[in-house]
Figure: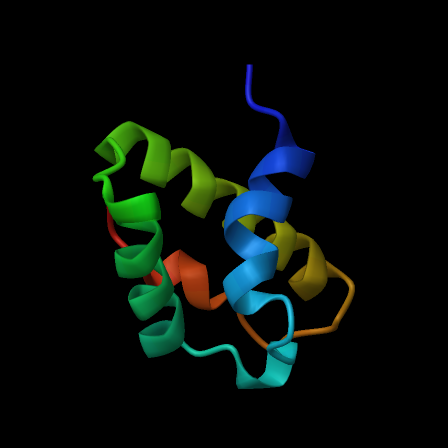
Length: 79
């Protein structure tokens, strides 16, 4: 099972936690995905990276539903 809190604390918040939602762009997310793929100088599995990205997508889906963002930039990402 995926611990969403740990994923957020270990992967999302360190790199994206200070980024305003209005400044979160597809290129920035793409760069973040490349960075997390090489956590601590080791390559994470594609499945693990996909789970992390999926969690960010869910967070941004919720932000979109609440009117906090105009679109979910992660939705444009293809695994």
